[in-house]
Length: 496
Image (cartoon, rainbow, N blue to C red; front, side, top):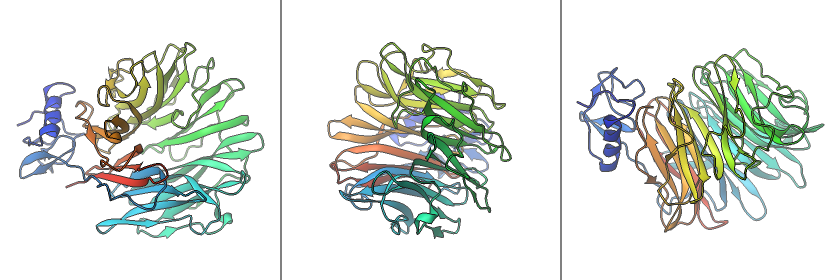
């Protein structure tokens, strides 16, 4: 019998060996260290990313795409993926030509994927899309529709749990106000409530707008273009939401405070709470230098089930480097922010980008990013236990990408039972590929690097990842192909 998984040690090594060799392990009794394990039934339990077959725990195997299995037409970008609470996958992206672009949604349809375009009835071009799924398969797809000049609107397409879509048909269906809006981000609460945030042009610049809809109710939209969460000062950028089952919500963004760009947040406590409006001095970052102003270096939030929160971002340290910083909060809302520019999460040298935080169901915090400390960009990870101990500290992070290989654009997902999956773009002899590593509950270690993208198709870039359902189905999506000929590709780690 395999003993209950330790927080570190031989049991973790056994799981890694299992993934490498494809061999089997005997299951161990349920309730003995597998509260965050995966599968196994009522009387036995298997380690993460394995399944019980004929009394033996065997590794789950990827369904890889082939070189000719790219979805849709050429010009795919902004690939987004989601998995519902019932374990059903969905994907979306933007298809761009030299003259226009459209939004595309891919749903499972028999043995293939069924494609639809919710923006087909609208004038203009669809850009900046994102998709989310609810607990019963409800879907929320949001995108920016760009018109000639600077005019743009935010639109939403929704799917019921029964599978019926409602798409916008006219400009009057927009969620945003004229003259322009951008960067929509949808998300579901575990009870089916939904949230949408975006950047809205208002009287003094851009502000963070939010729309809410309770399950079974109607959308509650901003009253005016000036009805925003952020300060009415200059431009907000890249708002991103995180939620939990308590009904807490955390939205982070970056915005000038008058001099430097700063990281900000608005929070709501419980389903009956209201979002806060930050005061003039309520920023999270150090005001001495600017937060990095790039789409892959924004302030990103995460929430644990019990209400612990974190926001991570990259920022100049005043000594020639750009580093990862983090602010964290207690469930009661007490924030701890960096004490100084030397108080970075990451190594204090080099150029860091794309920090991605996520909490496990047990409260463990994982953060992945990429950083060049002198030898090229590498994807790395830090891990803090639910007790607050950094067992993989950010100053000495775990290397995820292949040693010596250039690696960028990581994405991170954690499943409802604690399985962790990190994906990124990595440069090899054959070109840029999509690579992944998986690990189990908080006490295990990362498995081997796995290449998900097909060979001979062209550059594979900017992956997205999601995990969902009791069996923890995993879905990874990316765009791949020669310039302007990219298509959307999907890899699935199914539940057997």
